[in-house]
Amino acid sequence: MQVIQHQDSTGHTMVARVPRDGTAAIQLGSQLIVEESQQAVFLRDGKALDTFAPGRHTLTTLNLPLLTRILGLPFKGKSPFQAAAIFVSTKTFLDLKWGTKEPVVFRDSELAMVRLRAFGKFAVRISEPQLFVNSVVGTMGLYTTDGVESYFKDLIVARLTDLLGENLTSIFDLPRLYDELAAGLKARVSDDFKKYGIDLADLFVGAITPPEEVQKLIDERSGMAALGDMSEYMKFKAAKAMGDAAQSSGGGGGVAAGMGMGMGAGMGMMLPQMMKEAMQDGATGTSAAPAAAPTTSPAEATQSATDESSSESTPAFCSQCGGKLPGGARFCPSCGTRVAE
Image (cartoon, rainbow, N blue to C red):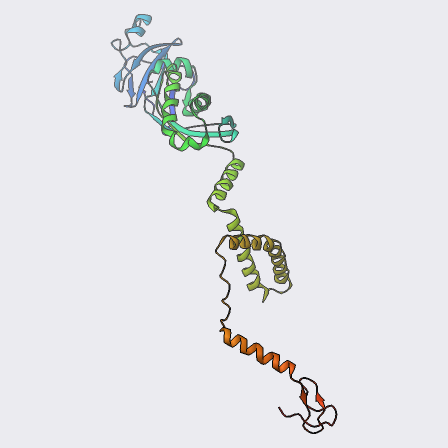
């Protein structure tokens, strides 16, 4: 090979071997091109001999001293040798995702026991190429971020579970603790990344949530708290339902009539309680004063009593026949003469 280089078109390649499988004949004097975001490790006989920084390098005895001592230049520097170049990307790989495969059981101070799911993102870069190649990549011809993402997301979840158990009492405190949890989690897993030659650049906690059925119950609980006085709310709903049934009964036929009857029956069951509450409320208020009796002077009362007694004690007689008339009679019972009023 005369020119040795590698360019990543996917953006996810962390390590690429040239050639992809095994080794190739590389002649001294060949050009090695290393991109700005790369480092190149030369291998021979399974050993890493030298590491090249970004730039153009001519493979001679000056920049391959270890290889020179091994070969001894028996062919005056022109003989090919079997070797391989491993290009290691040193850029920061963003948008790597982590998350729980199964919910994690958490002891909550308000909900007793609850299962939690968590997810987020992290970013890494290779800080020690030879350590990363020897401990992670090995003899693979191509290594992408999928391998790092698959392994380290489980490690992050394990550390997060321990962190939550030590610092969290209720999931209702989570919204104000995301930044603190992310910082603490990053500090705990950084050493786990470094032992493989990787620096953890960033780590974020996207969300920590209970299962969907628990979220629905929490929504119902908050909705009940928003209603306030449940008794007043039920009265309002019953009155509104009766009004809607009355409006729809005119054009709804039998269905609307049935709904109206159902609403009426329900309201009939509620009315006694509502009337009882209304009467209790009325009893606590100020009772109305009784109406004042009409006033009559003593003289008027005496005259009225005298007139009534005289009218009742004085008998009436017919002017024609002189017969006694019963009280209130209009005609004489003896002769039939009309009684003058």
